[in-house]
Length: 238
Image (cartoon, one colour):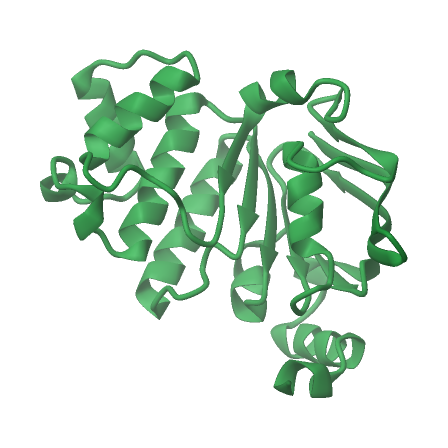
């Protein structure tokens, strides 16, 4: 569902992404770990078609993103670090609007059902988004992905700033999407959450994918050691 083939992005003499090769199948969760500037967000932006590659290709559901940017968006849902929703609209109104953009017209009953499936409490359905915590907004984002019947989910630091309970709830929602066959690519700093939810984990530095692991084949301690050895600890302290 997600493929990158020697995907490269340069800005003048600076290489933001260097010949990245990824393959995320249906029902897989791939977590990209790395410090700021490692190339994680650049990867997400290239898959979304927000920026164009210098060389190489990106594919969503076998469609070349560069050549079919509009078509690939039918299959995509995207949740950034700070999800932009309409603050003066309620959760159900936001879901109705964004699912409508995706060509999905749902009844009020169906909208409530999707919000409930995303883990949002029913008393929040008709409250304005401006009153929501970040964790609640992320649940609305998951609801939008569910309503859209997205096949691919792209996440950029979605658990940053969440408390442990909200972060755990978000991880459970990702597992629910996995059972539906959704292919997920998540850029994150959160080693613990990556180990908890991922089927595959990659460690990036300087735009390059330095190491890859099957999540079940590595312990949290081993992953942390590999991460700190790859991403110079002194860089993290800056």
